[in-house]
Length: 424
Image (cartoon, rainbow, N blue to C red; front, top):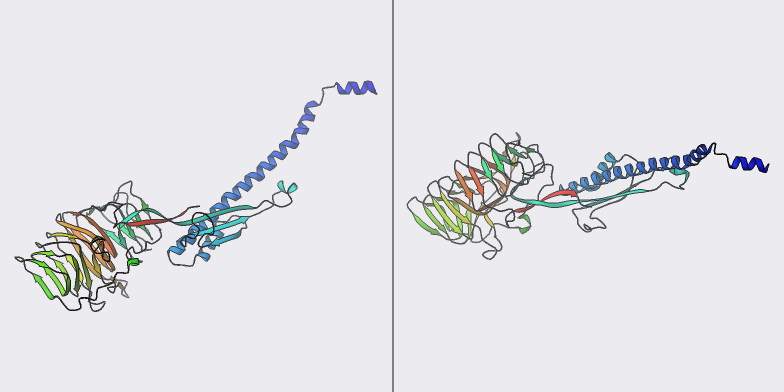
């Protein structure tokens, strides 16, 4: 027996089989663990995608004034590949850098599924957890904002060559909320729309940032709650006309039934209330003024005054600074919000329109704020604005003007642009 054992112990036959047998346990175990680990990682990625989508949908809903919970849950369900448990769906986030931000949404979800191999060694399946926070973040500034929520908000047509100097934005959710037609060219970045942007690569520079389906922008002047002055209540003048050969200086006051400038006018600093009628700067006229605000109003929404600046006029107007008038700072033209937009049964949009025909002698520094009206900028020659901002219902750029707006992206008149993104 001892000799037999010594002979077996020294026999090398079958060693490979023994080693393979011993190694198969490790090999099969490692392969099984690898397969389960890959599955856990895949579920983690899918769950992260689901909570990202839910958080984004919820933040977009908040931006549009809609209930966020149902929207967020709907997108969670659409993107979930496994059964999930929503651990937290909150506004504002409870934790993280955006805790307390009422425009941000936090989503936390978990999933747990039993896998064949790992269940041999684990009492319960591991819990996979994912968290996402979505919120509006600043991504540039806008000089032109259309507040209209329907139809086209910003329309650029003809052979316009516009260098805005900063971004443009439309709050319309329509297809073609920003529309650039024909040979028109506009250099504006970012171009932001709640709806879609109808333009081709021939209508804007290659480095322009286009942001369709973005959150609507807030009215940058709404928080200031500016109102039409009640004083003076009496008319300073009625149906005032400055003839072509006249050279006059006007004082702030209430000008009833319009002002027609055909000659030369210097405006003293202050607020000029145009009550009904039209504030018109005719062709060949000259008007200058610093620290000036022109308020367009009326007795009802049917007779709110409008403005018209004709081509071939010399216009050099600047809005008040904060030091000159903190209430009206930066606002050059303000229209009574009672001049609200109306949509007829046929779908035609009507509103109080201000017409600006730009030329090389047009210098406007300030904001044209018409919360219930439209602005149409047209012309046939070069126009270089000092720094013009427009916040209106709708804006139209047409004709063949070469519009150059000298408002830098970091100017006080430029309104911060936002885009909803996953931030955590």
